[in-house]
Length: 222
Image (cartoon, rainbow, N blue to C red; front, side, top):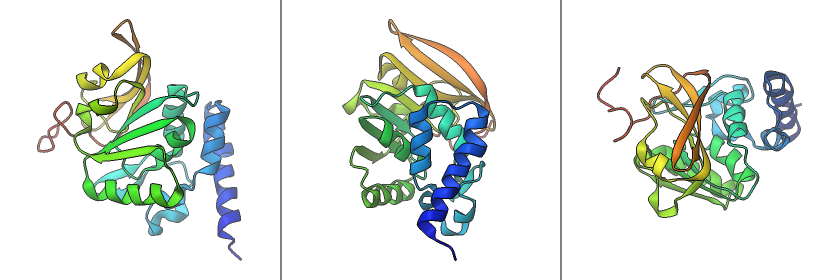
């Protein structure tokens, strides 16, 4: 008999032990929260049986929920300690947001597709994630009201790092962003030191395009 609570817990443990730890993720706080967050609630019911496999899934509106390993990698690269103010660009399903909410003090997340934002907001309320603020808008312009941010994470591919995000990043803050063309990117991590962003490339990746004033024009594919 399927015991939802127990069986999903086993699937999360297997996800961490089989797909995340073997690929080099060592931050115990990240591993622990990935064992905790119910990823199956962030995908459609038809996709829930695949929720703990290590590949992205469609969430509608031509958007995806990232594979667990990439979520873990991007989160680990932020090196969160628990007292940070984090800005997330691209709420999507809300799964990455949920991970961040357990590891940082405050999370501000922007989604340009209203239906996804509303769905995620309802789920955050249901799960009791009270340290998350969400808004609908152009994420490439950031969220000036709550800046500066100790960490910024962008979950869509950009042609370059949007200047407003660099401006809203605190001194010694880190930004994680996929940078490249419309269809494939490199995952880039940057650290702001004396008002200069020092960057390095981590690995290749493939994200949906970042649409907005400082991203891609939705009518043009490059």
